[in-house]
Image (cartoon, rainbow, N blue to C red):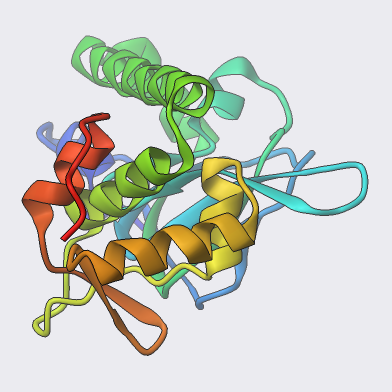
Length: 225
C-alpha cells in the first residue's frame, strides 16, 4: 500500500505527490528477518525495535556483526549490489519495519538524486562504524571494549524509566560482539559493578557512572574505588 509510515526511508521519499509503495511488517523477538544467502525482494527500514546482524561460521555458530535500531536499513547493500545476503538479521526485540519493494527502490535511486545521496551517506556511515569496530577489536583491552559496548547500548538504544538499558544482551552475546570469552565479560562486569560504574538488576544492567564508563571506553584509566 502507498503510505508514508514515518521511517527514515519514507522521510526521504514521501515529499512528492506520488508516494512509493511501502508495506509495514512486524517481527517477534527472536524471529529471523532474513537468512544468509537469500535473494531479497526489497529493503527494510526499522521503525521500532532492535535487531542483530550475524554471520554464521562453518560450524553454525553466530558472530554478531552489528546491532541496529530505529531508522537503520536492512538489506540495502545486497539490494544495491544485486547479490544475495551474506549476513543474517534477527529481531532482538519486537520489531516494526517499513518494507520498500525492489522496484520502488530502483525507481527512487534512478529518479531521485536526494534519495540517492541519502543512501550513499547511510552506507558511508555503516562503513565508518565497521572501521571503528575493527580498530577497537585490535587495539583495545577487554574492559575498554566492554565499556564501549555498554556506552553504545546506552547512547543508541536508551534506557527504561528505572534506568536499566533498553536492550538486553546475554553475557555470551556481549563476549561474542566484542571478541572475547564469556568468562572475561563476567569478570569485567563484576569489576565494573564493584567500582560502582554499573549495577546488575537481575539479567539487566544499569549504568550508574556514565562519566567513568565513557573514560574507560576512550582508553583512559580510572582508579578503582
